[in-house]
Length: 123
Length: 402
Image 1 (cartoon, helix red, strand yellow):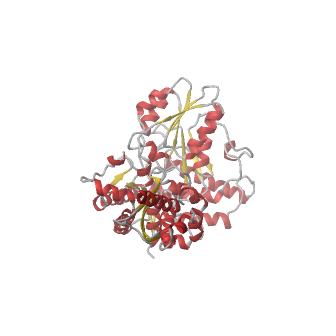
Image 2 (cartoon, one colour; image 1 turned 135 degrees about the vertical axis):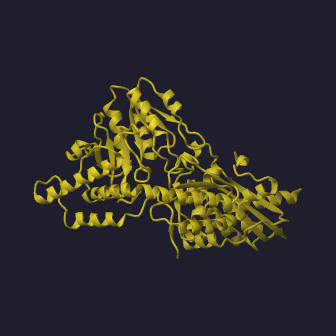
Image 3 (cartoon, chains in turn orange, green; image 1 turned 120 degrees about the vertical axis):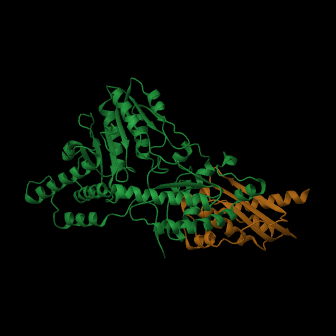
């Protein structure tokens, strides 16, 4: 039911973990629905220098989290904000229809992290 | 790669002897049992023998066995068939919150037809209370339907006591025994059962065949209309190979019963004790002892069931989960929720169900690969991180998320 690319990111997820001195953290989903994604960012000079994630969820939730971290590393915040959930799913070669709704939230988590970074910076 | 099948509650391997005899009834003895020629008579005789084999397994009379396409059809026939035929007597049905969807959705259908249905709650072990059944009975109650053993968590219900109560009150008693028949000695007379659903493929028989036991004298109408097969109870040309296979599977199950229960119970205990010993933060779902011999069901806190299943599958272990992601809906298992589990704990459930082919080596292999998978998934889980940071006294009962 999952593409090879999804299974690759599920079995060998990239950038798992936390960043101790992260300057942007975003979390979406809730345990009730069965998916929680948390993204940690280290932003320097408007560039995402480092990104890591922690995810509780199904295969699609883990694979999309992994994929989004690969997609944004080295990008500017503006570029990162343009990445949509749809784009993450496409980069994985698609997701089963049922997963598009509930487990495809990685870009949202990324955007929350960027929002958090901007808020932190403003203070 | 090594493959270990631990999903025998979903379906089982068809017994070789069953498959062999079925082929004979497709390629050689392929007559229609309704035909009067020798081909037909041969098939007719064979299905009557199969009926007797199924009846023997249940302690019933052969003329109380009606073949269906499986457990789902048997449940539909029992519930709708009894309700619609007894409308004048009353409009109330009692069932439980943890039934199979074949029962629950049949009851919902009847609610739309004007019937009133009571869905009894269960306790934290998925056990129905006899007192709750007693209190739910009204002068309108025509049917009580309580499953013999739960398909997800394995809890075995107080069937004999409920049967006795129903008998005293003059109310028909149906049990969905799909998970129990063939894995546990079920006797319709000892348990005071009026109607019982069973399915062939759950005990090494073929898919697409099941039966409904109907005690002589029970008022029930047919649902499927057509020819007069199964004495008018179930129209349609008989699935002869399936019926012969079900008969054979029943005979074999009866002969192997004691041995199978002993073996499966041993493997079950090995898995339960092994998981508790090797993996922290787990919760056994279902009753500790009043439990199907082959059922193991745990919630592994901080992880989600589908990713657990995928990881097990990558190691060759086939299992199932009550997670929403594996059920195709947005909510986790209605059984786990009815037991009072929170959504997140229900999402992390894993069912390992044993069958006659499983070995000690299968259980050992599962116990060998499971801890590593849990460790990896938990290391990725934001729930685990916040838990580990704040908890100084890890508990195994999940009060934190209660």
